[in-house]
Image 1 (cartoon, helix red, strand yellow):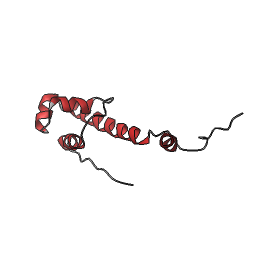
Image 2: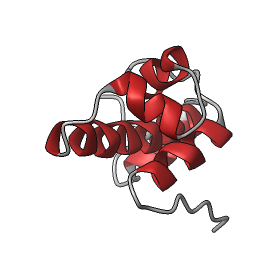
Image 3: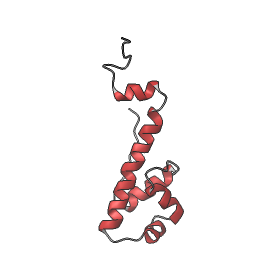
Length: 94
């Protein structure tokens, strides 16, 4: 029986070995932000067009942010969206 080379390793190390860690982390971060923004819009009865205008971005850019499967969103839009819901987006190098 072949020994599993991933046994005992972390999921992060597996993703890193497969060359997928950066992409998976970026998508996870974006999904958290998208979820927070969507919850804010719903809880405060704010329309997407009004929110996009308030944070000085386009409705299409906001739609890209809110689409959990779409990784195409700029860091600038993410910062604006976080500020728009009263939060601060923090990026750190660990």
